[in-house]
Length: 155
Ligand code: SF4
Ligand code: SF4
Image 1 (cartoon, rainbow, N blue to C red):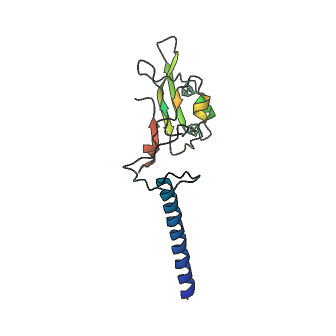
Image 2 (image 1 turned 45 degrees about the vertical axis):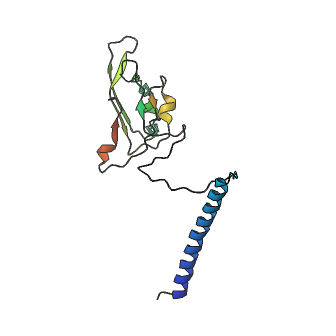
Image 3 (image 1 turned 90 degrees about the vertical axis):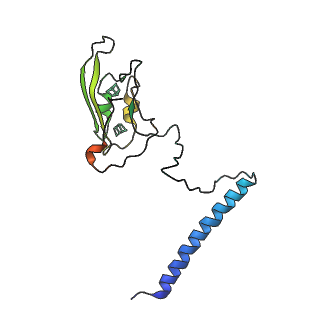
């Protein structure tokens, strides 16, 4: 049987927690309004996805291949990122490049985001700084798993 006192007590507890957050946030916002600097900031509601919060420059977002001057990816298909990736989610298919300076280039470069753990090891391992995680894009939702296989070799 439901204990009415217990239910009322929990409702009161929930209301107290909500009120505490409301008054604490309001206090911080009011202090800032009057120019008082505080260690903490009051919580704000961001109207996502219309409004996007600015990410830290160090944030690891979705991958991209840095382009050369002619627009082709600067990747030389050395496979170091494929080797180092702990989730084994990078697929690179390589072919010879007519440019003797380049030698090899990827014909296919896929990151399977359904398995990526965003560790950034691929970025650290790349000897030519070809792969970066600085797109600022963090949206990953998809209705099919295959949609999370992201090709990076196409601009
Ligand atoms: S961020 Fe980590 S898990 Fe994701 S592709 Fe790079 S090495 Fe693999
Ligand atoms: S992205 Fe970098 S590490 Fe990965 S295959 Fe290309 S050149 Fe090698």
